[in-house]
Image 1: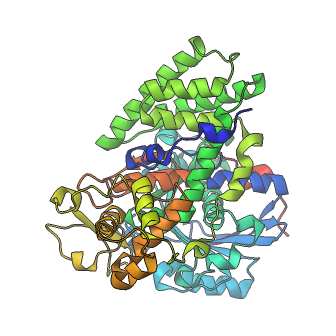
Image 2 (image 1 turned 45 degrees about the vertical axis):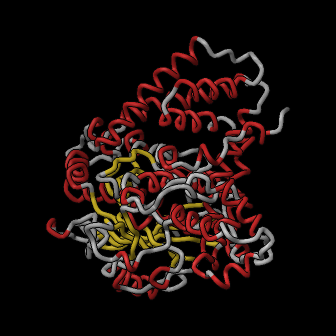
Image 3 (image 1 turned 120 degrees about the horizontal axis):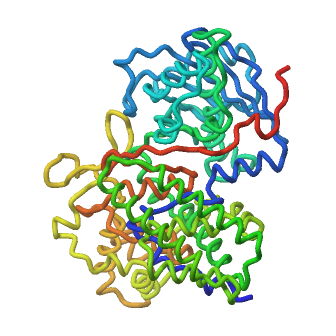
Length: 551
């Protein structure tokens, strides 16, 4: 079999924002990795605490017993007045708040969490907590489901499909925020070593809480008439999420991690394309995945013009793909998957190409799932700058990995129209307009293209054998981009190959790329700076895998 590397896409093709902004979740996405581990290791689920009143106010505990110990989602329900409900990160009250607890909380733990978790940023948690989160009801649909179930009826299926969730989280904090456990404290634990496993577990258990809550409220209202939500309708509901600019710079600030995510996905695609044959079971799995992609594209709704255009590309592209697969694709010929991919590159828009990538990976779990273990990163190991590197080598790195940036004229206002900064109010990243807003003097160093161009010009008069250390002694302002360049030389997918301060840059492309690695679906931008998504739609619930009665 040919080496998979021969089939790998180049970083120049993959690491552009227009393609990153067409990303789809795959079986390597973090929530899929979590669910596979839960199933493979036989994690046991129970709900040892459910103390909710008829208004949905109270507390609950959802526990997963893992080979490495228990993990518990502590949930608090609140009676939130309508005028206080907001998806904005500056909100101060929510319908529900949560903490993922390391172990099984006792009464003292629950009282401590009850005094802090509902306050979110204004409270404080401890390293016993692995994440802190909050969620709001999708009010119209949530109330509709409660009313229908209370009268013994099932909710409207069309309404459920169009929205896809009953609650949406507005933040899921981890990695040391507000006193929670730092990433380093849990990275060595197999259950949590893959990226964002604690956060994904928190959201998955939040989904279970949401269904329990609507059924509880229906029983409180309807008594014996009330019914449970039909299993197929439950399965089709996920957890919504509203995500804004605070998440966008993550991919820039973690170049080695980004490289490992992208490299794993690209290696997976290359391995599939390198297969010399396609057996009947794998082809059947692909057809099932393609049908699911078509159904998802049909159900996917958005009012944003950018996303509406992408949805048109997706739906039209998948229709062409279905026709090709049914009438022209020769699955008996050599390298059928590569043939399919090459046809897609020539005939489909990027949105449909990336959907095809996910469908092609889906039936190849035995071939690619092990790559999930390569998606974490020890970024400190790559932080040091090699001061002995000669300028000639650094110049060559810039030519190879930053050719998209080093010849751009950043004095042109269109190429430096924006600046990234930290909001004083929320201490989170924001994006300003350089010509009309104050704050450029506090700009974050996320302008990687402009930094690369400045370094390129600084090297013009340097002798080839000049050590990088000597250059940086005179020009310390180039330390950051020199470090990034040396990282990029060893990690080819580490750098986003686009100008992140350009007038036409779309932050939602950054958001979609990261969220697709989480496993998000139904991307619905509300502007070019924030997006709603759904997580865990069509996934099993904790009780569907392994269940243990509460003690």
